[in-house]
Image (cartoon, rainbow, N blue to C red; front, side, top):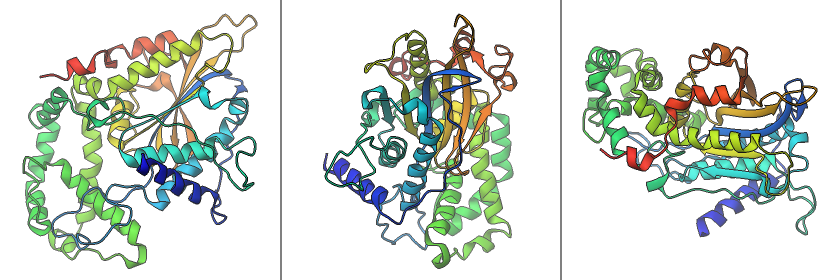
Length: 400
């Protein structure tokens, strides 16, 4: 409880400081446009910029004291997510203008950087409509963010306990020829990295994915220390293109999951799809909006989870950048008698890319092209297309 209050206090100080200004992209309001009336918005996004969650044995910065802690949101990350919230407020201004706090459901992975990112987005997206304290400068109102314990965080945490998924992932080196070939071609490179970093990337508690994590750590350290950054001397000793090869490892660690067993994708991403579709169906039956109506859902998660979800959606995007993820809109078509079925529109938002939000053409998606003839899709067809990635009983199915 104390840590949550401390987080809120830090966010308040940051948001209300006079030095912070936001460059807002002019996203159009979308309550009513040629796509029809907006009925529901579901926003999934990766957390903001963070410190490394891991430093290697011979890291120059191994003994550095990270004020935020390892794997925690940085000030840049807080600014990024608050700014994304402002951009979303701009995009949905008319839609949320009459919204009450109880119309908003905000959920997060139990990992702290996700919770703080969600709080920052909420602060930017839902500023107070009236004075709520003695201070006229307060630009924040409390919007509740829900989470669950790590042991049951299947919906938004890709590292939640799931023995079956872990087994399937471990076996990918045997079942996916492209992965096996990639590792064979890079065996010497991995061994050389181990020698200079003091890490064993073949150890059971490490694995080839940690080569990508090494790239992640190096990039974060460079961005964090800026002009004071000290590059490790071993980079050139390994090869003359070590960073490029590390980046390839990192990129490949997201690409290869397009070859992962469908069962693995369902176990990791299927709980999100189950709830997301239930939210769409519930919203499609609403005729009168009141204080009990759920109008916006936000979900704060991680790059690997969003990668699984985008692969399941048939729209692989590569590693999701900080503050990026899919946006699912449900709209009532503009027809004379309002008899047409509600339509689903899928977007991809990116806080890192100047808060750009782009439409994903479902008729060109590997997942939806057999079901959707246009860029959008009727809710029934959208649901039908996702039937094999919906996880109905993850606790049972995760058992080996």
